Amino acid sequence: MNPNVRANQLILMGRLHERQELRVLPTGMPVFDCILWHESDVTEAHATRSLGFLLSARAVGPVAERMARLQTGTSIRAWGFVAPRRQAKAESAEQARVASSLIFTINEFTLGE
Image: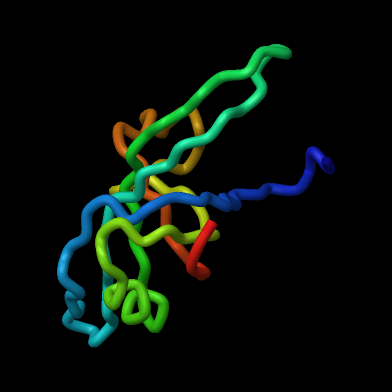
């Protein structure tokens, strides 16, 4: 991996655990907020570790409209990026605070795992 490339990409398979109703911003942009449940086994320090966690997620635009049609319990494979829930106004890492809450912004998804 090139250390000069700044990447923030996440691919996650999970189930729609909780969902909000589709909302529309004053700009007319649709937004869909949900919580995903993820389970997997990963390797850490040559040992298998079982994970299970809830993750806040959001989709905007046409992806939000498609996700709003999904029922709770639907399995999806989603990709996008992770961001702080509220954007910090810092000029550098030294000025920034640790994000207390992150959200997975979904740019696209497919059904099933």
